[in-house]
Image (cartoon, rainbow, N blue to C red; front, side):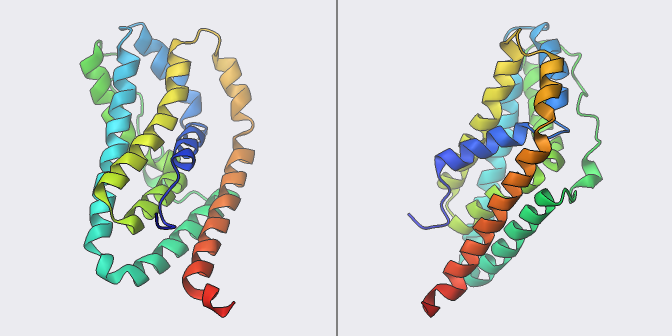
Length: 216
């Protein structure tokens, strides 16, 4: 397996970390608790919709990477710069995705049934891109480098599973109140800075492997 391939554990952990975004975590109790009252299957449908959105992103990005495999050297340089940039954005809390960050994420929440839940989940998968931008962009960048559609779909499916587990726990657990969510949110900055440092190190390691390892 090439070094660009993403470990399933890393992809899953990235999905869990993405839920801790300050513009996602505080909204989840409102979205999911209300959805549970409109049918026990509706939260599952929402999570499925979000997972489909992220998995399709993996397929599209992998196809893009496969199309540019002839220019892999340039693609790797772009990937290194992008991942380091995403890491710096997280470390210094610089928002690169403000343009859509305040879109109405609760649209369609009052509809009943799993079908509307699925459609809501598909929408949220797109609307939440600003919130999970640096982590998701880094995952998609690595997927593009690998250039395998099947592997890309699997990686983003695993990422989606990491995203889905906390959502389902929130939806079906009476013990996770809004106040507890706010308590968890207090540590969001620390999580983001830690993830930013990891991304910077990954980008620097990729640059070393691609351009400097021959010096030793």
